[in-house]
Image 1: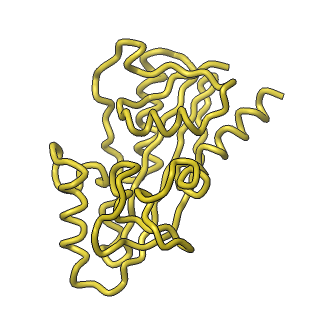
Image 2: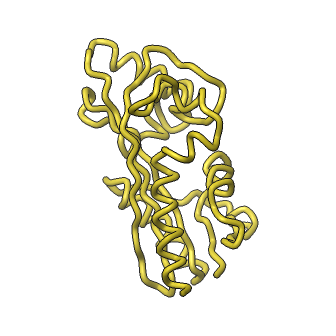
Length: 193
């Protein structure tokens, strides 16, 4: 079964490619020469994932999947949530996002947070969603060189290191994206039986 992965995010593409079994074939939007930014205007993570996959389905009428991820920080009323990638503004960097988050969290003792990923899938016009959650805490300062986004400040529950300090296999085995993707893969395998 072939799919389109509805993303322009090179970091997410690398992670998903590394986690998917080799028999899962997909094309990227770049490979399809589609460079238009897909809207993310809904007010939930699942809603944004569905919006992306519905947009791609409407254009290509091909089986496709997309994902959206949010970081929810308890003391900040679950911010940045759907604004995770653009927390510090539309054209800001991951470093800017991290800096703003640490500044906003500084007055708070409770540093509990969680990452939530939702994969949305459309097969033959029917849509499905798969959620993965990783609980953890926000570090005082960034640590590590790996990963991307907020990985240098996110310490998963039960660990002393940030995602950015872990190797990719260790991170994928416990991450929100890994959990959601595994659910989607299991579902697709069941359909194929």
